[in-house]
Image (cartoon, rainbow, N blue to C red):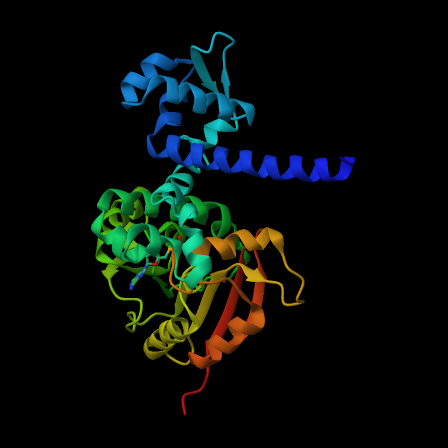
Length: 340
Ligand SMILES: C[S@@+](CC[C@H](N)C(=O)[O-])C[C@H]1O[C@@H](n2cnc3c(N)ncnc32)[C@H](O)[C@@H]1O
């Protein structure tokens, strides 16, 4: 066989291996195994006893992860230590990703993508039988891990945008579907005279109050259970962070109209999203986020700027400017369109 086909075969086998590494990371994160190795080298037999896992299976998975530089298994195959890269899966890491892996691993959604390809319905629905939000609402332990995953991603993607924007003093900032309040806490720390309103589903807000207190902004923040499709409390600045990409166009327009319904003409809306290039050239790096949306939520998608502009107009907003954040994040700033 010519050299080139062999190279192509090797590249595909490498992707297959990466897939197994991904599933192994989801599994060990869900079982909090990295946290138990994070303190130093551990005996694999003891680790298996502590985590209620099968020793042989655990050893083999750890050896796979060692091959990807995430841990080190000794030559006798009896102990394991995490590398610095593997420590990113520990809760105590400064920028942890354990919940991000644990969450995508919850329903093993990846396997249900075959169903998605056939009918466009999210893989979560195929795997779980219900919408992802409904599943989370019924499983408080998984809801907590999901909330933590959102917090991890917020630290990487949205918090670096906060100092790039002006947060008016004495203003009220409403973070709609703001999760446990990671972004809102950062905004209130940046704007020490501002007040915050955090809106999300009641089951998410349980963790929010303690988080805001820990961040020292609890006294300037109201936590308000609310529905994304109803008008939020009145504010000067509205934030929708990584919310619109969870919904189809109809629902996005509804969300934007609901916020517009609460806003005075002087208000500003800041939408934090990854914006796809609109030059028609496929962007493989952004493709993963788009397929993650396809897998998780009903008709959810990443969008281009013209698509956001049109949806904002349908929802009563005029796009004014875009502020580029770190790779994979922009802030789209809009003002209310005059009401007819
Ligand atoms: C992808 S997360 C983003 C969280 C946060 N804004 C961030 O950037 O990390 C979407 C949020 O929407 C909330 N959500 C989903 N459906 C909702 C609804 N019907 N009403 C209120 N919040 C909702 C979820 O609880 C979740 O916190």
